Each structure stands twice: as structure tokens, then as C-alpha cells.
Length: 88
Image 1 (cartoon, rainbow, N blue to C red):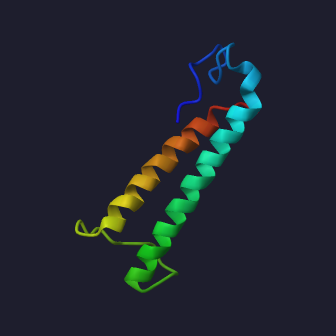
Image 2: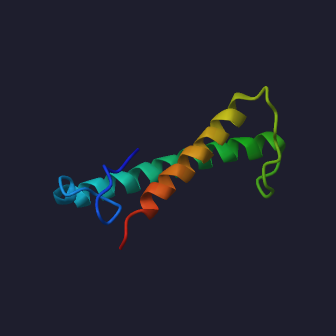
């Protein structure tokens, strides 16, 4: 999810400046959704390995949840970078 074409301040172009609150809320919402998805997948992996108190050590390439969890982790990191672009 790209914020906008980059403006002078690095967040928004002059065209989108009037929609700043809306775009910021969308960015926060997107990060929240990805964090929730990653959390659910992480919990599934912890339950599969039998411990909710340890890090997930699974690297099973046969497990579809492993790939979904890794993709969610990558998407969440990108969304966090987008959120960090907001200068408050």
C-alpha cells in the first residue's frame, strides 16, 4: 500500500495533502490488519509445535501456514515502513 506520490516532506504530494487524515487512518488500519493476521498465524504455528511460550522454530516447506506467516511478516514490515514515513 503506497501512501502517495512522494511530496516535498516525503509523505504526501500537494494533491493529497487535503486527505492526510484519511490516508493516515488507512495506513494505520492496514498495519493493524497485518499485525492481527501475523499474530493468528504465529499462534497456529506455536500450537502446532506444542508450546505457546517459545518462539516458532518451524521451517517446514510442506506447511502452507509457514509460507502465509512469512508473507504476512514481510507485508507487515513493509506496512510499518510506510507508517514510519508519517512525521508527527
